Amino acid sequence: MFFKDKKILIIGGTGTLGQSLVKKILKENPKVIRIFSRDEYKQFLFQNEVGEQKKLRFLIGDVRNYDRVLNAMAGIDYVFHTAAMKHVPSCEYNPYEAVLTNIIGTNNVINAAIRQNVKKVVFTSSDKAISPTNNYGATKLTAERLITSAEYSKGASNTVFSSVRFGNVIGSRGSVIPLFKNQILTQKRVTITDLSMSRFMMTLTQATELTIKALQESKGGETFVLKMPVIILNDLLEVILDEMCKKHNLIQEEIIIQEIGLRPGEKMYEELMTSDESTFAWEMPEMFLIPSAYGQKYQYPNAKKAKKGTYGSDNQKPISKEEVRALLQSEGLI
Image 1 (cartoon, rainbow, N blue to C red):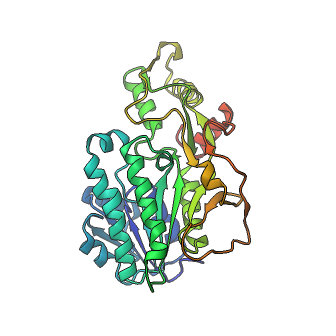
Image 2 (cartoon, one colour):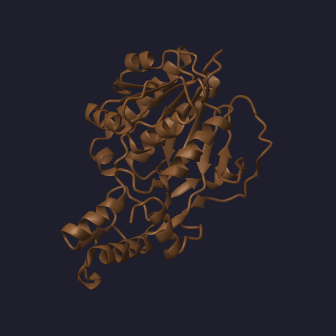
């Protein structure tokens, strides 16, 4: 088992992905998992959920504070950096706050990891980092570049840095699914940006397993792009409406659908890999691998050269409405 007797730090460990990583890694009998986040209430709730666990340590701290990150990383083998400001409107209206968390915070993680001789660091990025149209995406792109550049600027350090990109995690905080369900029940009205919008979506289980796999596969400076199903927002809404109306004896025709248009910085579709990146990318069954343009050139024996072209939600075949239904049911969301 990869994490047996290892020391793990999960930055942003009380977030949706962070909590899932904790639960998954615990099964492999690590020596300790340090759960680092700035929200004491979320830490309190998570502590209550997991119960008394001798292998867990709950650390209050902000990724913006280098000294605190350095202290939290002492003796650690592997780091998952999942902390971020990620709500698009919040980052648009508070741009420098997003810079402090997403860029300065990531730089703190890099410097602390080198100083503490961490074995591997994986940074969770976003599809919004590709051709960014909003501040959130721009900060994530810069953070990715910091992680990649750390591969050749780390000097004699043996720390391996990599990034993993994925889109929307179904049912996570900020997901439209709980929002739609609440609006249907309380308002009998759903506000939606655009019904023809397409999005990459994956389950929390998939995101967790592939983030761990990216850490295991990394050799230095890579960006891993997780393959994800594409969902049309109209199909998602119709499935949720159908299931919610059946479950709560509502009349579907009475639910008002209101299209409100794109928010500032929002896209009609999402991208996970640019055409330029695809020219030197590798393909694995579950992900693409974009090697660092700098530093050592590694071989990936279980990968083949990727096909040239943008990997976007606008040029991938969306899954059917019944497949959407099965996906939501598999996660207990409907």
